[in-house]
Length: 263
Image (cartoon, rainbow, N blue to C red; front, side):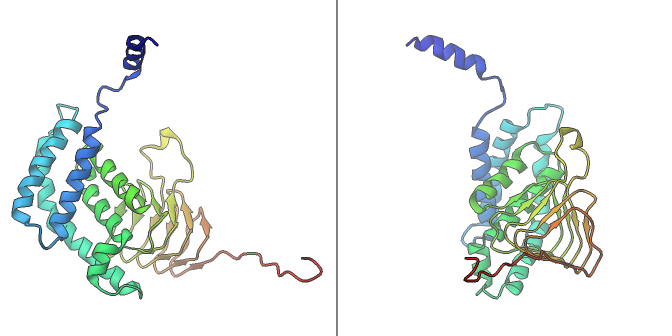
């Protein structure tokens, strides 16, 4: 075995000059610290804001490759947005408590509901996404995806009092728009009707108006698809066209009953 030759060949194939996995680890550490700062009663806010600023500076050094973008100024804008983000997340937690008969306390929602955790990391990542900070928001939501099974792109726009129940398998695409008081159950996909690179700047994912409930494993596709307010989308429904307000959409399964003669 020619070890030096192998090393030479491997180095030739390492063609991504900015592929530094320290960024991934640092983002996850930043995300954990941020989450505890907002919610944990024993975590001192003042002290942790200083820690977060230092951690964010590390992210800037690792992720801000374009010297013409003022990434170092993002933190000041971001930290000012945290009170409003926390206010929205408290509304999300209250929505879960009020909607789910299985929830025993608000503390249970914050600590035990994967849907709430996924929403929290999405909202914290979305603000960075909106400011044009590269890659970090995507790493934040992918970290939450890995832990909860919920894949929310940080570019999605989600209104107040959002409720994801059971969580696992939910997919919400980059250009999805969700209005207020929407409830989503496990396995729901808000996706694109077509996938092609030239559609990158086009709205590809559906719009969900206020007070809509989408039950388990429903799939709603397309950037022009709008689900009107106060509608209910039943489990396993497949939609690629708009639905007017106050509608009920359901999937009707074919049922065959076995008898002695056809068993």
